[in-house]
Length: 227
Image 1 (cartoon, rainbow, N blue to C red):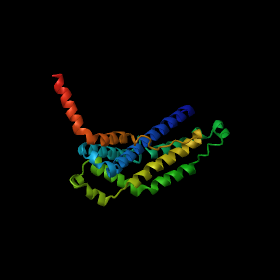
Image 2: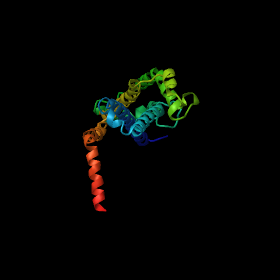
Image 3: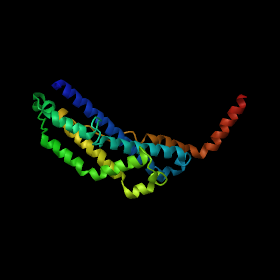
Image 4: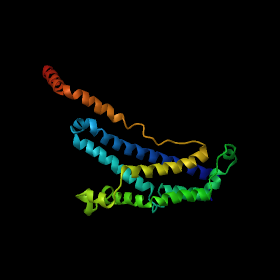
């Protein structure tokens, strides 16, 4: 039997790992959305290296789909999934939450019923989760012949939106923060804070573009003068 110290240590490690995973996925998703939005005013700059920016967006979306699928993979009995996390808490919630230190803070109200409620919330999202699995298996993690040449068919059969992906990410964050609050009396934000970094590059290129020919001429002259 695991000691109480070992159980709590495992809980803390498990919780923080899932938090970091969901924070990263949310950052990837919001950066993907942000780059697409910048086509409204920086399309000319993005089109200077279309293949590069296309690969970036594909990589971001692929990471989100595969990452969300991994967190919601019920069949993965050993992985760090939200289901395994809840099952671990269900088996050990008394050791984790029902202690005197937490009661003094007025927290520690986790019960089997509250855990079951979270499992119900996850079950309610099963149709949407299955769409994510379909995208993962049909296009990103594998290459189904049916969708290889035309991903639009996948979108028609398993339509999924950015809002859908946000829903799944935010649900995991909501569940994690319930246990974070009852354990530490705190809250972890998953808000993406770095998505506008790319604006520095796009805006600089936009300002430089009108002078690019002059800059190239200057560079050529300097290179010639060094010879």
